[in-house]
Image 1: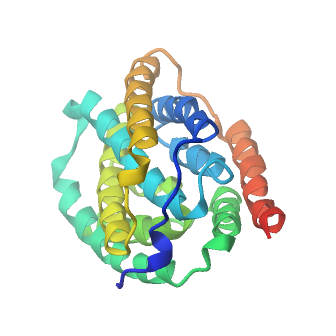
Image 2: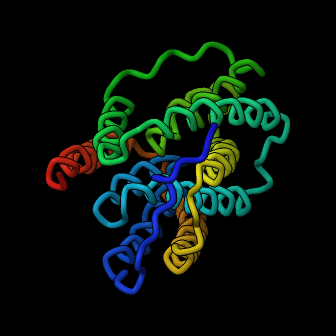
Length: 255
């Protein structure tokens, strides 16, 4: 993996009102993930194109989602199953190496289109049947989550399918999904730093979003105890689809 100059933008943050619209969005998506265990990252990244430059989308998303997932796991720490994490971490490391190489070769002008298409595929295509839940499946989960996450940003549903083989209880599933996603985001952040992205110019927005997702995790954790387990899939899929379609057309308006 080599550094790339195109991944290190230099932006004037004196005009940032549009970018700060992401702060309440970050709170809402993190609260949603706190209730459902997934979905927040997809909605957040689908809202980012057009509000921040394409070079900053994935790094800011990874940092924000790391805070969201770590806080969600921390609020439910008693449900963490520690023995599943080493295999996931190893897979995530391998996935970051491969995904980083592919990301570095992309023409970032078309990145929103790539993200939108991948989100549509992940939303509407049937998920592959996951066999077993042993260490090999966990290794594959870490690899898939991080390598594809370098290109799509948020790829949670298949991971939930792997963990469902171990435990279908909602609190356990939400918290351990947050843990494996945290590992994935750590590896992605490291890859973006190696590729040359500088987080320094983005600290006002990034700190605001981190505070928002942490508050969202707190709210979602408490709402999860009161909201019955419902089928959110129908309305969630259509909301994600509309946002993905917006992402697909953005590069054509900017060219």
